[in-house]
Image 1 (cartoon, rainbow, N blue to C red):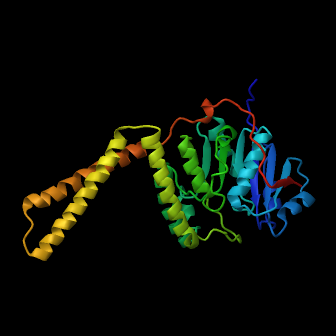
Image 2: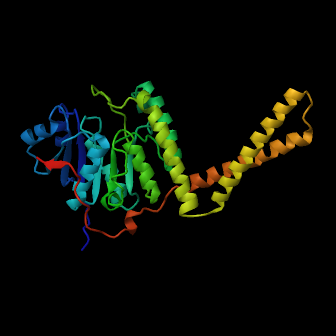
Length: 335
């Protein structure tokens, strides 16, 4: 008989968070059945600290011998939670920036069959945005715009927000060996979820900044993120509009690019020839360049409108049967 209440696991990647992690664990309420702390080769020994000082029977500590990044730690936690028979897996950081009291907000849409994956969004409450450092605010806005293009989730924001929850049935589908393990993890997760049309729902939350120092420096990763976004965008377009399906949007994209390219190139050549020869370009030649540009832009806008309207709306987890858990992550040990 199916359980009425979902079994919930919390995954906490642990790296340089020894000052806060015990308080974070203590703040996790009784609705959670398992707390998985993944020590990602932490130089402060935060995993050993939890093992020595935490008496909560729900806590399991896993240790990476080699640092794998936040994504690697989270995926290790996902695999353990799946093996343990959990239904919903929540990921929060161990630095105290994410309030465990908000956990029901993230779990509810999945438990009610309204979402496959939920993520925090710090941009809902305008009065709270002022707490966010201006550089981080601008950087997150830019990263959010790029994430919309590369993932196809036009209705979500704040892609670098690491407060997330996922249905265990959907987590089993993830190609865990292909997902980015470092700071691009959250955004790459959105792209991977989009490949099988999982439903993502934003959860409003307040920005919270105290004495914690973020390891993510947007100015350092912007170029790397841009390259990865372009790569994922190309993959998404190929998968969705040419490999898995052919639709009117496929025609609009190809025809729009061809017409726009022809119009721009032809117009540039004619303009240059007119400049060098001193002979004015005829009205017919101008129209021959302008019309393909205008029609091409219209077709590309039609494609964009189709793409935006195609955001997944039907949760995948409600259509999946329960299956055995996947294998444990390599290179981890219990402590």
